[in-house]
Image: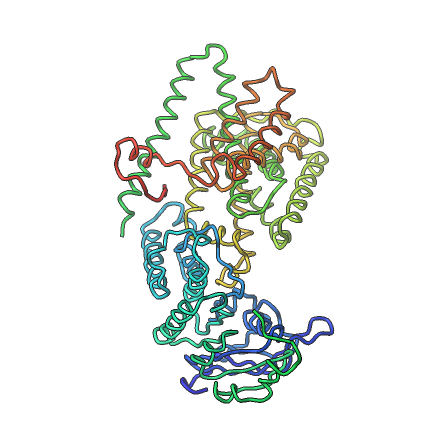
Length: 264
Length: 333
């Protein structure tokens, strides 16, 4: 914990087993305010499972996690979002047939107040709130450089832009902790560089903490302040990018065994 | 902040258009263009109106929420019987018939909505095929229950319901129902429900309480089906539970799919057309279902999204095009 004083996320002894298989075991992590932490590990190490635990998709069978001191165990995904955790997905999950703008607005629904009656009678309140929502959504789209594509149907966007739209949608929930699941997957170097700028921009603007899963080592090494490495559900290393790059255990996990390679 | 000018203009245009349509029908019926068959045509028009409400409300589930319901006639039946029992109870009191009609609609709608909540809460965790089967089962339960309850006629025809549904009232009820559904869809609620249709996992991750919104939509849909049922009861004046059978539900679903899943325009035109068609072709009544299936197969091959897809009609846009003004514009009305 370097930057802020407050602990945003605290996971202690978090674990989950599916039947006899321990997918994640004794997972400990603390993320401070506006800190950027990377979570890496070979394929099948349990990274996405950790994300699913932290977003309420799976319920932990052991341990607990806290957001700003509030215990999150037993909360449903939408309640975890309400508490301040938002995520993107490894395989993009957009509302494909909705417009880019609507995709972002859906995530703002939670904050909108107007009632069904206001919607049916189109009261001034409806127009005010809808307009506010649209302009705020446009702001977020500007951050991810999609402001010119607001009226496009989401599924018609190129791959890299879909990834960025997912980030904008996550931002729209007004979260404190952003979980990015392989945001650079499938991107070319230019797009990755742009993504890097966006992530830094977001952190400066909103003072949010980020937990990042990524396979692109150059990206992870460049932006993460701290990296945690897991393998077979167990944390094997924890430290600054330099420490991790030279950690023999990590090198072994990635390269050590025969032809078990880190593919896409 | 007031409503945008362009949208306001479209609202007014649509309203004027609706009034004109009503006046046309009004004049045609009042002038006795069809002579002795006027009443008959009025009847068809009334049938078309409650079918439109049924199909539009089902479209809310199928097109907007993306879940199939094969038991929509069940909700209609609940609305029909609840409202009929209600008006029978008030028959002796001298309530003005228009007030009684409105009350009957509300009672029918609320009864169906309550059933919607009861059915929705346990079942809406299911998706796709499973939900479709549960809705079939629900409609069957309603049908069997109503054939056995004393209060619903106990399997016999429940007759002597006051004839309250006349075309002129029903037309405006239909307009109100479709408008409310349309405005519901074009609001944050509809947007959320469409998001759930697209990807419920992503919707949850965006802070949407998926189950809540599904139950709400299901209830709203059931409410309007109940209103349609109330119109039906007070138009037919006699009914039997077995007419709200699986085939009737399937017919509504067919009309939704033919009209266009997700398009209110498709629901309105599709339902109006398809409910008038069999009457118009009485002589070929035998071939009606055959014709239906052929049309359905053709549509699935050539226009899988239905005739209108998700396209919505906008009078404002039509006028713009005729007068050669701006072409594009979000069809928000």
